[in-house]
Length: 393
Ligand SMILES: Nc1ncnc2c1ncn2[C@@H]1O[C@H](COP(=O)(O)OP(=O)(O)O)[C@@H](O)[C@H]1O
Ligand SMILES: [Mg+2]
Picture (cartoon, rainbow, N blue to C red):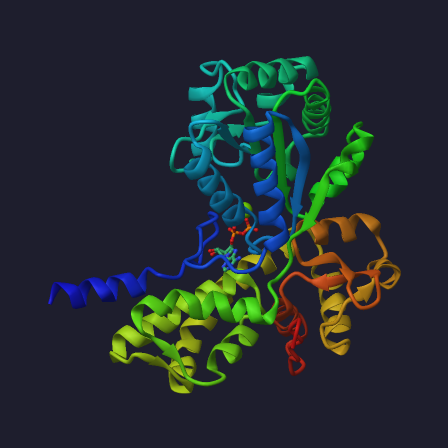
C-alpha cells in the first residue's frame, strides 16, 4: 500500500517546472557547457591554475540556473574538499520583504556579496547595487585573492545582467588580474541576453575573450530524452511517436517540457495507467494550457507596462508569417524602429539573437514561439494558425 502511494508521489514530483533553477530529473543536452565547466574545475584542482571566464546567456526558462546548480553540485561532490564554490544573485530591492532583508543583512557581512555553498546551493541575495559598488576594484580583487589562498575558488554570478556597470567592470578586471597572477580562480556569469550588452558597456574590453555560451531551446531529440529518461526506472513508456509529439508541443523549451511532464504524470496517476498515449496527452493538455495561459498573461503585462504591446504584435505577425524562423537583425531593427525597444524586448526574452546555424548569419528568434500567437490574439483578437518549427526535425 505504502509502496504504491510512494510511487505516486514520486511520479507527481518527478518533473520540475519552476523558475528557481530546479534541477530536472534528466538534464538534457548542454554538452559543451558541461565540458567547459568540468575542464575548468579540473584545471583549478589539479593544476592549481585559473580558468577563462564562462559567460552564459539566454532567455528565461532555458535552464541557465538549473545547469549551474547541477554543475556546482557535481563539482562539490567530486572535489568538495579541494575547491570552494560561491554563488551570488545580485538583485534589485523590489519588494518590502527584500528591503527588510537588505536592511537586516547589510553591514553584517564582512564580504557582502558572497555566501559559501556547502552541499546544497542556496542563492544569496546581495540586495541592491550597494553590495558590489561599495568595494573598489582592488577590493574585489583582494577578496578573491584571500579566498583563493585557502582553496581554489569558483564564483558563480547568476542573474548577472542585474549587476550595475561598475560592478561588472570591477569583477571582470579582478578576474583577469588574479588569473594573471596564477591564482586558481574561475568566474561564471549567467544572465538574460541583456548580459552581453551590459558587459560590452563595462570598461573591460577583454570580456568577450571569455568563453560565451548562448543557451537556447533544446534540440528535438534532447527534448524527447528529457521526457522519456526520467520514466525508465518506473517502467513507464511513451507510446510510439507520443514523446516526440509532446516535445514539439513544448517547443523544446525546457520549462514547458517539465510542465508537460508534470501534467502527464498527473493524468497517469489519476487513471492508473503505465503508458503515456495520445489520450493521456489530450487530457493533460488542458492543464498545461491553463498554466501557460497564466504565464503568458504575466508576460503580456510586462510588455504592456513598458509600452511595447504594439511593437510586440508587429513582431508576432512577422514571426508567424515567417513560420517562426529567425528574422535577420537589420529587418528586426527596421520593424521595431527604436533600438531601445529592441534592447528591452531582448531583456524580456520576447526575442533573442541567435546565430543561424545554416546561414552563419545573426538573426532574432522568438523567446517562446507560442507567446507570439497569444500576444496577437490579445491585441488583434485573432491568431493565425501556428506552425511550430523545432530544431533537428
Ligand atoms: N537541460 C534541461 N533538460 C530538461 N529540463 C531542463 C533543462 N534545463 C532546465 N530545465 C527545466 O527548465 C526550467 C527552467 O530552468 P531555469 O534553470 O530556471 O531557467 P533559467 O535560469 O534560464 O531561467 C526548470 O523547470 C528546469 O527544471
Ligand atoms: Mg535563472
